[in-house]
Every structure is written in structure tokens, then in C-alpha cells.
Length: 80
Image (tube, rainbow, N blue to C red; front, side, top):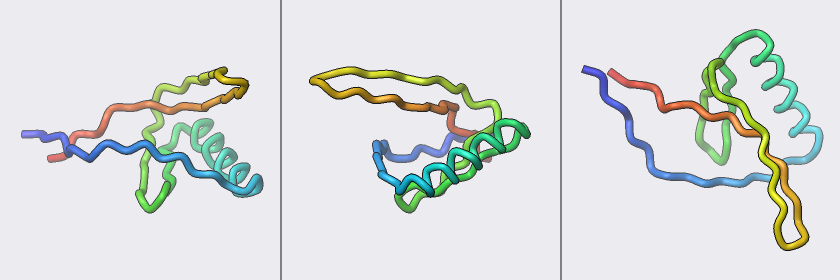
């Protein structure tokens, strides 16, 4: 029987120097092009993004500030 591992909720925002951000974007783009899983560590947690993740771009404008978010969404994987 497959069971879903339940992880606690999390909402992390982490700033990176421009060079590190570019390196991460480049690795992400390479994985997407090759249909490979993208792996990244964010604030001490390892994240593994499957190649079939849904990708969208979100734009927000509020109180004189603007924000663009590149989002990847996927369902938590089943564990045995």
C-alpha cells in the first residue's frame, strides 16, 4: 500500500547574490531541456522537482511594489 509522506507546511523566501541566482536558473533550465529532475537545497531542505512539474509565471502588484515569481508545482510523491 502506498502512503503519502506528510510534511509540515512551509513558506520560505531566500535572497541570493546575482551570480548564485543565475547559476540556479541555468541548472534549472538545463534540467527542463533534458527532461531531468531538478534538485535544489533551500534553507536546509533538499527539494527534488520532477520533470513533469507544472510551470507558471506569476506577476503581482501591490502598494507600489511589483513581484514576478517563476513557479514550479507538483504533487508530493507517493512513498511505500
